[in-house]
Length: 346
Image 1 (cartoon, rainbow, N blue to C red):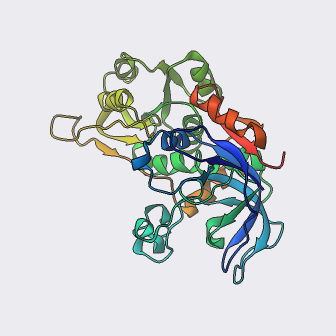
Image 2 (cartoon, rainbow, N blue to C red; image 1 turned 45 degrees about the vertical axis):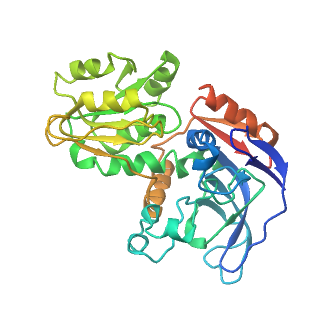
């Protein structure tokens, strides 16, 4: 089968031919319908060789949807041909966090060498994907595969981040979204669907801000040195109750701390290497800073239900399998409008 692989440190991904996978006991083989392209893959591919925590080559793609092609011995709950979405942050299934349904925070994944598809295990940008357990699949139903595949990360991750801050997103509150690309433009829609907060979107270009307005942002601000002051002006000097940083670079993390309100939340989602000091006087009183990871399987089901209700509409660009390297090139250059999706079977 064809697969898009990251083959050596620093090299561009390339389409190669690899053996077709076969499901072992408890495993499920999917014929991939659509696979998402994510900026975190670019972050991984920028790591020096000594920092890469898994063996290369690696088939990329941690967002995947497909149809069940084969079931390994003992795999139950699905039938051949069922359309499904893949829950990406795989865990051991038996530790305390997994028992709570929070496999994204599995306590034994590192010890046992369990890694997500496309981030250590073979990923979804391939004609077929081997899923380790049927519990990591969610029924897709009648949802459109191309529009839905980004929700497995670009929807689930902001949903998880927003959900923890819901008690602060009351009428009259302000939520700031820094970075309105793949995850950020979904976050704007989720905030509008889930809260009564005013949504302020920040990005570096008018083109990106136009997308934010199109999907529901009440206000948009250029993300530059004056952005924090602009947000404070919009909030009468009080700052925003919730700041979601989907870039996570040093300048955006610093700006997030400068625009958060007393008792507000700063959530750093992006992988840009930024940090935010916490200590008395460093931030407004009782402001919290967190860096969450992905979300739970139950939350993925909730995100898909929001999509069924028409609350989320992901802007996508589609690419054929042989065009997959171009999708990463365009993403690296900041030229993807919304989310890039690869269609391995055309």
